[in-house]
Length: 384
Ligand SMILES: *[C@@H]1O[C@H](CO)[C@@H](O)[C@H](O)[C@H]1NC(C)=O
Image (cartoon, rainbow, N blue to C red; front, side, top):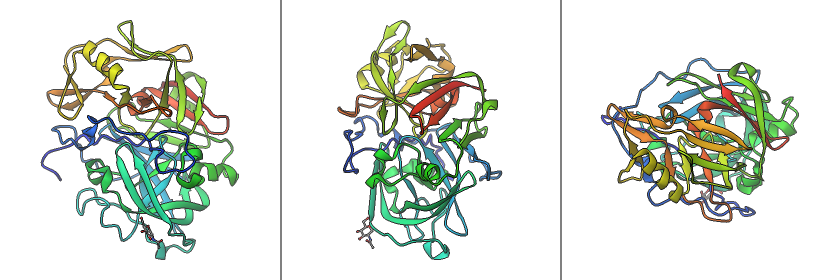
């Protein structure tokens, strides 16, 4: 256990850089956005390991680690080898650490489950080189093919990566609770256009509906739920509000505006909904303006620290002519006893892919989100 606890923020929107046919520009991090390696006081709660897990009916229990990392269980191989993965709507590949990976997590804290191909009767050799670039950094290894399982559904012949080096993800991986990442974006942004686990489930006729739905627990540390192939109406109030995906790749939509105190900072923009990003991000000019409204001070790693006690104005994302409003209680994150973080980071994503706002876990905690792959649309309702 580290003596200095950490806030293990993630930024898992995948960069297009590594994928040949990609339309979008690399997702480059803003210089200041090395926040991921920040060690800070407070917040870490070394919770017990996973216990109850869903299965068979599409339900996956989503565990919350520090309100920064949301992960659940899936398996690879026959018999199944279990992994805790981030179900990441900002990327489109599946990877788990290889058995012989020496750059995958710590030896004691952050120990990872590792995939042993020799222990699986359904393993098929591939071994071509694999590399992916996330906002948080690069990961590399080799491709393999095996049966996978999520939500109790078997996925035949899933091409995935056995990772040999995940050190690029830094401390958020090393000390984090997850072994690998399961990308849930469209396979147009998957490396080599490899069909994603979800696309394979659809194509293999395993699920009734080509949708999956996220509920992140409402309170600190409470379990959330990912439903594969369905929608759980017990976890939201009212009707779902549907928005078309504006560009297939990420789960991207048109953003009418972003505003605070009546001041518009992001008219006619684009946003992606990304379960693998802990906070929110926006173009640096806009974020600077928002930070000045709430009186946030930028620290050396580009995070904005804000007064814990004051009440700040609402932050509104206008989508489909509807207001999605976060109160200061929802966008101020306690980082330690006496320091608080303004939950939005500056990140400039260059054209043609950008500029983009990223609506990460801070947004998804408030709104239950349905990702309708089949009809290329997103559904939102207040989480309950
Ligand atoms: C595995 O990938 C690495 C690069 O990540 C590559 O150098 C190596 O040749 C690959 N292994 C095989 C057997 O192709």
